[in-house]
Length: 73
Image 1 (cartoon, rainbow, N blue to C red):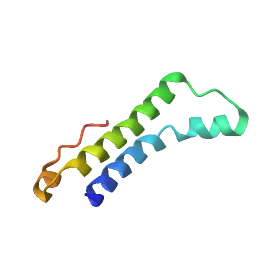
Image 2 (image 1 turned 30 degrees about the vertical axis):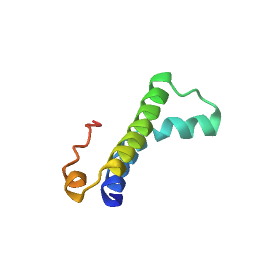
Image 3 (image 1 turned 30 degrees about the horizontal axis):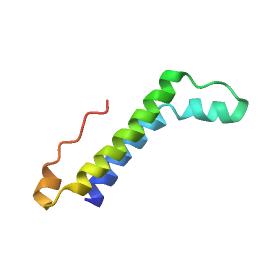
Image 4 (image 1 turned 120 degrees about the horizontal axis):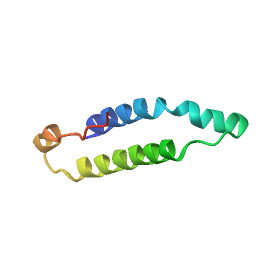
């Protein structure tokens, strides 16, 4: 379970990294982060939490291995 969850979290992290510069710019000089970027980042983190919960709820190794990750692209 841990390996599958960590793999998905890595994928989420890669997606978040694409918009990290908005967050850094906000911290650096106070520039507003566009609402659609904030919404997308929140959605990615929520998806990560959902996937983690779903995987942790699975009761067999076979079910964990067959878990179909949602598309994040």
